[in-house]
Length: 297
Image (cartoon, rainbow, N blue to C red; front, side, top):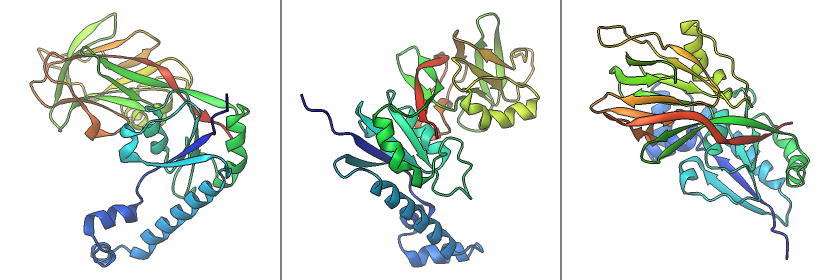
């Protein structure tokens, strides 16, 4: 039986220039828009050209007898990834988080197209390293960092996955009302919502909340655990503030909505991909069974 030819799937997001063109239709209109706000079109175009050059160089690293595919971020939920695929995310760290939830163990290589602009915590590889990383990934000869993900499971069977964090709260700036149960204690709360983060997510949104609340939770990036933080819990005759944060290792954190409308649960900052969380809906949050297999360099 013949071996399946490897396929490299490049995952990208639109550049700022492409988004501006989509919004304003013409280059001239984009120039006018930027200059009216004291910004220069040349800088945006230079970043766009830099990204295209990195992407072209990355695609040229693929062996000629291999297959290639290109997937844009908005199309991830409609894309099928095969077991033999190697995923190459060219962009910011958030792009790696976006694609992680659609995979089933395929190795992921994050390419940082602008090291002077992006931190590169997840997208840490330089494009010039890709020529050696691709065949080594197929041969299983690269070290993988298996970063734990978090999942939110609803009573109807719906599931959300996150590499960084899951948000539970109200879609606007209104107070979120819910009942939270950590398995030992349960409490009705009114707050700005709560964040549940993996070890990877501790460097993102959860970090700012942890620093503001002076509540530190240590979770390893490969540890089957997560931390949670309640944002601005409000004490009243009907709501408490005892459950402000903590660490979970395996057992679920359960949240039941007390919001008549506007309740949402979303993952990794993608607000438009929310699950409605209105009155009586229950969500259980646990470490996920799948993880991100990030290729280390």
